[in-house]
Image (cartoon, rainbow, N blue to C red; front, side):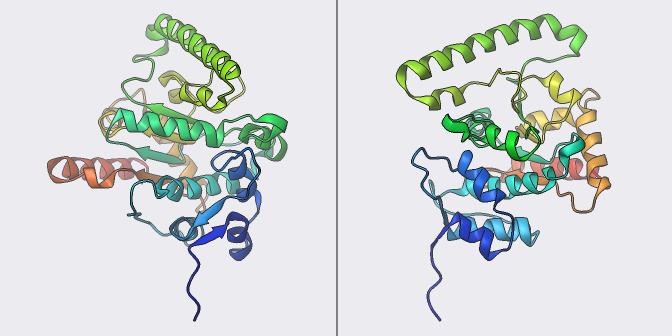
Length: 284
């Protein structure tokens, strides 16, 4: 037998596994975008992770070295499921949390937001961005995502927080405009992905109130905030809508991603294990 190849052109995955090439097209617009239109390579561990999680519906653990592409191993199955479900969204869709990416630290959650903005919320020259692709191929729907940590504006109900919320919005719009201006002057378009997108027609949800009213498809908390959310009434719509979505169709799969798994050891590991049991019970 010949030696298994260590790299695959992404299109090969779709052909080999008999799935829609929508996946290879979409990731080329965002997660794997490059301005030279080069076909992105999948490494064998990324190929195997995508096949086992998306096609064979297995739980996976990825243990590879720093900089080896572990993030793609969990983002690709999430994106693949969103693309598969969104084919049916022509006449609307149920809002629910389809994925939770759990982080031990706010800084790690912030890094992930940059990746998600590029993957799901980009506009590129010649209509080659993720949002452009969704406009053409998914009825203009968006894949919504939001960071939900202590840094997310703002605590409290909308009525109590509306003044603070207004001030936060003004500041974030200022930051967004400044990032766009700097990106244009410098030619470094990557700068705009370091701040929340404040355009009206986009998938990023920047306030707690917006996510409480309409669950994002991808929620990014740390475990401390998740613990609080599970105890408070104000966030209960997020979990209730997700439970209804799971009950709606047996094909609906909730992705729970625990990044930096090696950090959850000892007492903190025990606490997070119990927290996850509470979450799964809450979702039925």
